Amino acid sequence: MDFPLRESAAALGLVSLLALTACAPGDEENGSAEGSRASSTTEEGSEERTAEGSAANEATDAEHEESDDESAPASSPQDQTIDAQDAQQTITYPMTGEVDGEITMGLHSLEVQGETMLLTVSFVPEYDDGDEIAVFTRDMHTVQFENVTAYLLPQVIDRQHMKSYYVPGEDGFHRTGWASDTFHHWASTVDHPVPSGETLIMWAHFPAPEDDVETVDVSVVPGVQEFRDVEIDWGAHSPADTDDSDETPDDDESSEDADTEEPDDGQA
Image (tube, rainbow, N blue to C red; front, side, top):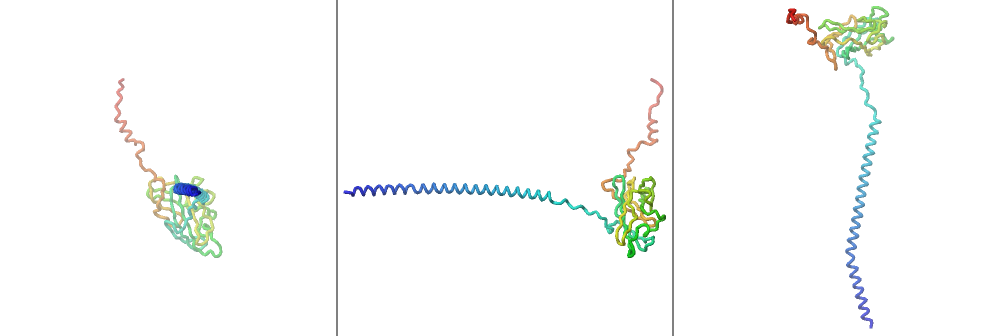
């Protein structure tokens, strides 16, 4: 009879099915855990690559910034062009030479530079320059001697201390007004053609004031009024020190000290 055999086979199949069913949940959990670990590893790797990429980008940006700084041009130089409209004082006077017209003279600055003082003056002539451009000296002014056409030497006047300052010359003598190029001075030459409406700049150096003075008068062109109460720009310098506290005692003090000494009676 074969019934017992079939029953045994059926029982074995049922046991195998139960065994497989019992193992399935564990396998799913293991698979889920492995998947989570793999996903976590992938995310960490992605984060690391992102961080590395950001660091690389930052380094590249920094290199570009440094390169831009190195290649960037230096700051543009400051424009120091003198504008006649910026003069502190102006004086307009008629031309005295062969050309008819007038000149506006402007005083721009009087600044101390160490042991010297720099004067800057502008001239703007107005005339009919249809035929030719006039020369500042021989055409616009009457000069005493024909060859005296190179320099125009101003004078700085300290009326408070009754002193005048002149442009130094190599010959050791001071001059004012027009001077020839025979003697070289610490000043610019003015024997130049100047178109109508254009600006001629003249500069001249003087010794720095010896006294504590803030304003002076400046005479530039002979026969033309002077600039009055011109303020001196001392800049980083200071007016001359007039304190006499460090001076040696005078004769009266010396005699008083001698009188207070004990007389010598000749005794040992």
